[in-house]
Length: 243
Ligand code: BTN
Image (cartoon, rainbow, N blue to C red; front, top):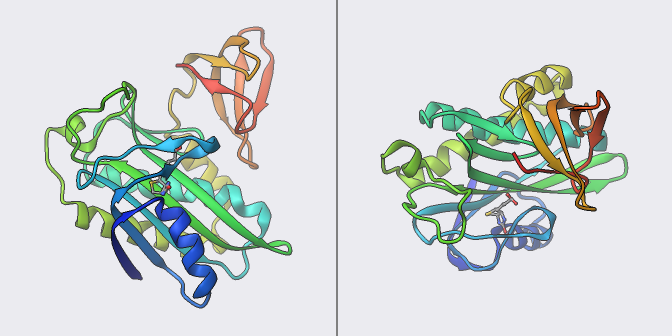
């Protein structure tokens, strides 16, 4: 893997997407920034990070025979690879909050932004951005955030963490063409945040409903069983989990 270290950049995802346009022959490139000035999150949200305390990086991976329909598999694999590294680091009470957040107890530890390039029926490449809270001890105005240090009381080596995560993600993605989506879905569901627990969900028109997360579909929708016995499958912008 090739590692590019930047002291400051707007967004490592945006930088890497531009970079690979001019050097399309490169695969397994990682860009990490000490200071990310305009980090991007899911649904057009931002991503805040504290320089030198937080890990903000993006990975570029090319594919040869992965179909567009396997984008969900890719998304599950990235979340699971990061989750598994954090298990190795003994972070307590880890789970994956649908679709891609990594949680420790009730708090968000990491976010993932996957941006795919398609070519015909195939997935040509992905830029996978990860924001991981590592050694922060406080979060101003982010009550739902936590860090590895807050969760464990320990200080972590950011460079080693980057190496371990990038190695695990690239390895899992290199096996994607031979992965069985049902098995990967099962593994993902087994660590899903608030699975089977009564939770409150809000739809974009502000309606709140109780329900229990029962799992995900093979195309990545969230399956919820509501109190009135109705089962719903929600896409990305269709529901918000209020806990
Ligand atoms: C989310 O939870 O909404 C996803 C956050 C993803 C943030 C990371 S930080 C590195 C990479 N560069 C970005 O601009 N975003 C991702």
